[in-house]
Length: 68
Image (cartoon, rainbow, N blue to C red; front, side, top):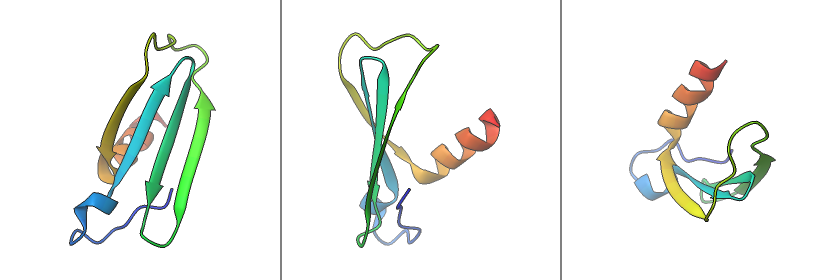
């Protein structure tokens, strides 16, 4: 993911996550690059409506470390 590491621009340090149906789309930018990744949730329950949230990059990194 393209995420800024500089805390002087906090708006660029987050990852937008959009849950829709059985997929999740993650989008982020570091001011120079824009990245977007979509994956199917598979065994997880499908979202009944579209849900969006912005998570900090550090929280996402912690989640991926925790999930293995």
